Length: 257
Image 1 (cartoon, helix red, strand yellow):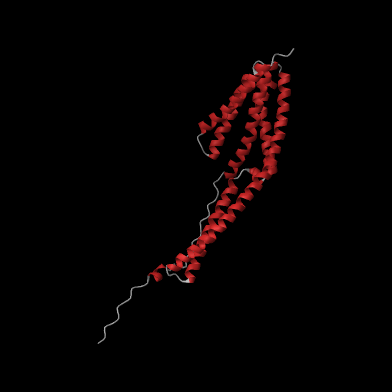
Image 2: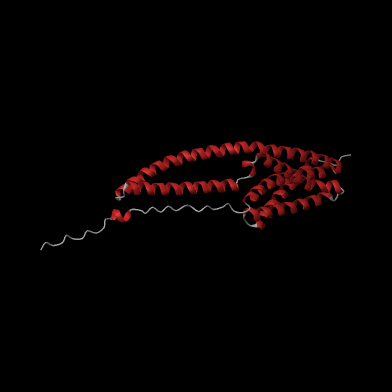
């Protein structure tokens, strides 16, 4: 009686064939408050610029002239000029930022496509060497490409959500930056409108420091980071500006007749 042929073990190729199970990438929503954080950046951009610049100006004018009228006149001129200039910068910069971003993304997409074509060819060769059928190879490649596309879309969604408002709404960004600059400039200017020249500089300096500290804390709270460090950084910038304006006033000025 002839012996039965030996049982052949299942081939590795058969075990390696993937099953048709396609898993979709779970969409992750942008963090709550992302747009608010982007808006805070534009508010701080204008408010800090206006406050710091006008603070240094009014302190320098105060020590140089000793005249509230001169200080208020110079401060109002700086307030209007700063607000208009910063709004214009926010608007015109948006076009350059969007163009640069578009160019960078297009270049990266072209580079990514070239790399993907090379990887796709290499992947197909390796899968064919492993013994997979053409149908299984096509399924693996399709699933890989679908997952990669889903992740790229997710990254672009997050980038758009976290982008400053000036990249997506230039008119709104210009208005926000312009108004923030005017409000920030008014902080050190109001004491010279309401108080005598002898008391106004100290009040203006204290008010500026408080507003800058609050802005730093809010920035850290919405965008992340240590609140105390952010507050100290903002106040330090204001104090350096105030000191510069004060020294200029001392060196170049003198009380007006």
